Image 1 (tube, rainbow, N blue to C red):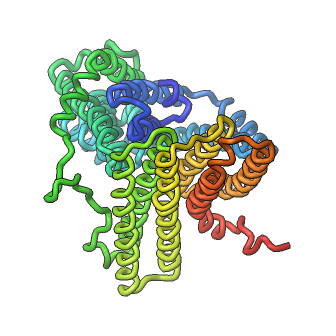
Image 2 (image 1 turned 180 degrees about the horizontal axis):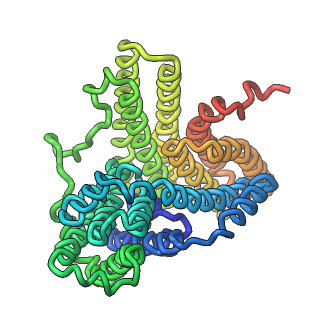
Image 3 (image 1 turned 135 degrees about the horizontal axis):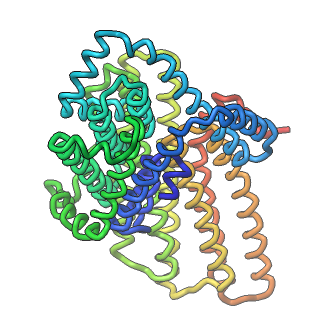
Length: 494
């Protein structure tokens, strides 16, 4: 709930939690509980944004612009952006109120709105489609509440459209996590069923007893906005005790489907029917590339524990994953090559080359894990060797740094944010310095004659170099974005 209030979006919380669930950091049932809280937090945000305070707009703009222009770090400047965004939301609401005033006396508008007041099912569907269209249930709810407050939209219609926005909001997260691992999709699907099904059920309750809305507030706008909050709070209280059974039931219906050869079936995002629509095809290739990066991230997480205890099943899984990644890399190259035969404009052609280059970089990262790190971990096991305590801690810490940068690279692939791309590329230089420092530390232990360091010297140094190679491969994700914005030098030479 707190995260949704701070981010002003339950969808953003759903995407973040999806990453934790997919990596096993959270159970699916716990993730569903978080999403229910995020829905309540999103409803609280609408309560805050609907309040009209004339002094708030200039105050937020002044403070936001000042913080943005004078802020030194990216986080400080981001706070300024958030405050400016809040001010613009309030401005937009005032503009909506001003623009809709002439509609109040328009006979056509009155006829349409009166019809929606009688046909709540249509109003519910319109609310869901609109929330999906603007990709924000908060924005949709604020619009419907504003129309109700202007006496343009009847209260029952506003209530139905607000409830429809809850269905649309749940569907946004479902689409954004469509290619995520099954555990994440189960969580999001459960939230969609609860939120959408509960909203539809509430519409039927309003049809049967419309007088209940009068209990939620003195004005039409207050009734609609309070219904939104009351619905999400009630849904959370009712569903929270049953998140475990709900996710278990979905696990039965959404089970892994084995392919013809017994392996798990993987659906590719590379749709050949879209080759005559270059922009859509490029988006498909970008989605497949994101999936490729997520698989390599899983490999990196899985290989690190093998340095402590060898596990043949895990090693076999990593090798199989590497083969799948190599096939994906080939498929992406061929797909983009076929797309180029159809003819593209300069911008799409450049984007196609960037994706092909990133695919090659990610393939090299997969190689580093399978051909180098996996082999080194096996050598440790076969020769019954162990790192020194300090050496093992250094590798563990360096691996954590690389994993953090891999996660940042995946975020950049998804949101194309120049600020995060700059942070990612800057992290490459930091990692180079850290790797040099760790190499010097290792040489220092060799000079001291530590037996463990001498026996594992080559393995230690090669592991650090492999991790640095993986980090470099993922940092390439940020280069095209910074080249486009003019933030990347063409050469490091002085």
